[in-house]
Image (cartoon, rainbow, N blue to C red; front, side, top):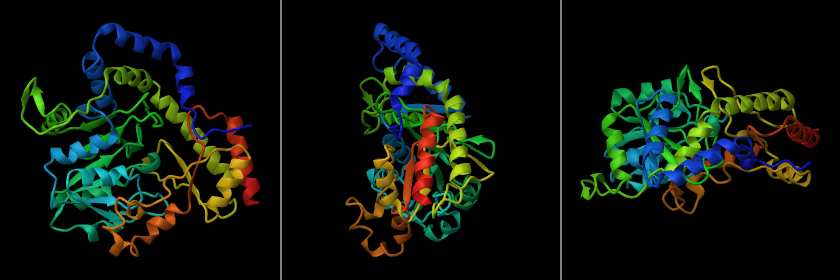
Length: 368
């Protein structure tokens, strides 16, 4: 049996009739930019996140960079970011001319280590981006306690955490603002690129909407040097359908994660994801750690099991940042050490238990 890492087409198969109807509705409506479907999705997703506002944008990177721009963060400013994350978190900071300041991660949760944040704060620090990596919420209370008294903005990178809950609160509505991605592989994924900013700040919401619409509130009146980054009505209509199933699909991910944890505990040198009482993760990814990562990946590939690495290089080791962070490479080595150990096993709401049993069997066979 071949086991794919993620079967995105299965989501379409399950909801085919509803998704087809949503597409046809858009085609017949004549609303191909903006319109009622986008507005409806924004309202529904804001409510889902227990927030006041949602503004659809073209992708998750724009969501984060627009938040930073909306708060006036730019050249000469510093933004604290996790040392272990997808590079988009850092790129958003660079996009506005600010400087990303990396902080090492907790090796168990892979999220930013809150005990190391305070040492990274300087008079130039304007924001901290808390990434809910792999679908597991960061320790938001600890981060809030560090940044609120200093007037530092707390921004959530929730691109992997649609529906995750931290101490009873949905991610997206906890910090000053949150950036989401609707890339097809996400827990709430569209059928192309898409993103959103979620916030309780009405001024920021209006600014973000303008930035994505050529800096304009009203046609041909451009108050900001904005761009073109809007959520398509087709994507909005399709996301509205899938949003109704998000909690159900996240619950299936949780069942799969529990089976992995129960049956892979104590296998070889494998470190399993840590589940904390404060966080209700949505298991966007199920990431294990092993010093034999490359060997295990090749072994699973030969057995028909597809795995991925999230992420093979720490951002400071990539061509985009290596020169700027060459002097910090030694102190950030732990981030690359983690990148050398992580391996993402198949995970998704349409992974069958029979498929998962194959993964578990082969991992146990390798670790025996």
